[in-house]
Length: 335
Image 1: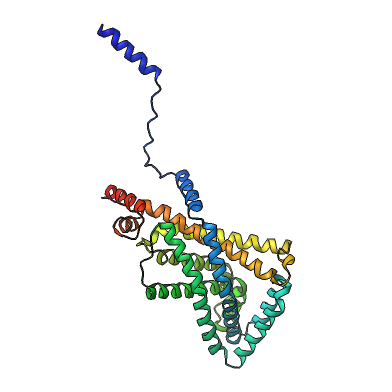
Image 2: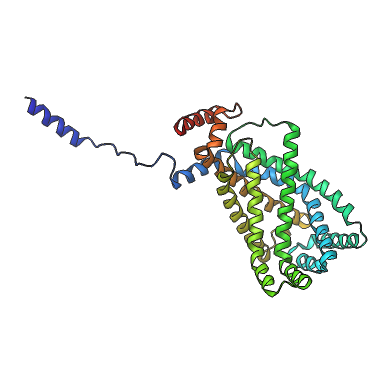
């Protein structure tokens, strides 16, 4: 009888399919799981709406930043004798929409004239102050987007957050200007250094090659600092590298593709004088989406493996209840 019961149980076990055992890897650690989580967060946090808010705020800061960039270029011409004005006019003629060409040329001429009369220092100071203050609102919208990515509330004081916004805006302005100068005037700056200091033609060749990775590196460092300071979470600096690398690569690809698109067609022609503004607003929209996407990637990775972020999310009252509980569970596993 016992033998018969054992055979019956054995036959029933053979008929019922066994559940597949989970693989040895930890749940949620595969690239497919991370990509799926990133896609979910992209839709859940409404990244495209956050990018639209960033573009709307940054478009008001753009005129001051453009004037600041041209004024710095004018000072560079006075120091190095590089024909910055001619180069800028060539760029305006080849790249700028026809509706704004006259305005940009007048800005270049005024900046060159002020630099020649010694008024550039005052103009740079005033323009820098305006650019920093107006541009900080756009950075503030990015910081709010980063908080949403990490699912935390803002607890920094008004003064502390404002100082961080101004500092990050200054960093962004410097990084953009450095990349602009290196990419546009890098070869001529190398010639000027060779002629002035006599360091040899090899320096000119090396500098001409290195100006590209330096420009990309400055953008990457700027984004890394932005991702490190922006969210209201304690982070380990190395865990914000994936997002900064992704955002940098996507931004340069988007800039190259956008430039190619403008050479093929004129998307703003249907809007008349407002066409150039709308085209620029669309580029800021793409930029905001890329920057927030990099923060979302950092949040997905940081909430899993960054000990500093996990500990902060597990102990801070600023995190949402779900994020707080998940961080506590992860913290227990780490300990």
